[in-house]
Image (cartoon, one colour):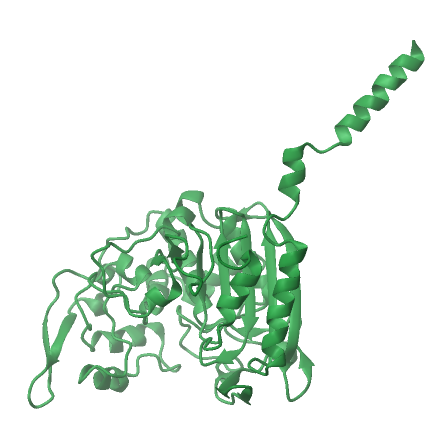
Length: 421
């Protein structure tokens, strides 16, 4: 009888240790398989070998676990300093989703509504006009606003702020205003922006520009706290993103990657202009760019998003807020969308591009419907794929922005060639 009881106990223990098929599937990566890892390695190495980038690193999580990391080439080619996991890079517009997250923490507190005019909080924008062209003498002509610029407009880039060098008369006004001078405060930035007419009526077009810098000032005005302090205390520090910063202290500068300008096939020249943006304290803390980060730091931000606003028991946003941010906010009537269509089948949510349909051709970027993401001027990239619970961050320091198809080939390597495997 005792032997029989012991046998039942052993059988119970063995069965308890076995994973169910569902548990086993959940723990195995479905996308980033060994085959995918080999593809990613091959693709990233090939760009370095061709000397079209100096160095690159990538980190991918799937189902809450790290499934890929590697780095190739150099953070500083001249010094033969390798690209590593803790290399610090300039993330440029990948600052924008962080700013949007900071703003939406105030939205959750009921401090504003998305369709509030921005002038409710930034009265400097109370008397905006809209550009209609120039007269025969080159004088800029304007008309009144059809409706005010709203907070929703500045989160989805439909505010109308000009950001081009080829608009007769208006581009000259924009350059003269010099709103993005690093010596300006956010308030001085707004004062100067307000003196330049909008390029088009709010809500009628999608045009990338300084809208997220206005979001930073909104955070400052609504919270009563300097923007750099607010984003630090409400987003970066709670997520343990201590190395995501506007200013790099001297002791960390040996990890700061050089930025390279590609002047032709296999030809790279080290940039000598942007370095001081991050090694001196400047009055302007832009919401649209200006942060530096590391792979692991930015992955913590991406992981918070894929886990619907929480990471390691810390809640930054509510699930419904993340869903709102990842929902396309562009009506079909907004047909003028600048270069956004080059990103593929996407709309735009709150500070993210949002994939609304699968790729129609093999030439388009790979991705899963429901994915939301953004990139940076130095060709950095991240995305959040909620369907597969996958997040990817790729760091490189390359100007001009990805003219070599790096993003496309990286995505293809992750998901497999079109159509998806």
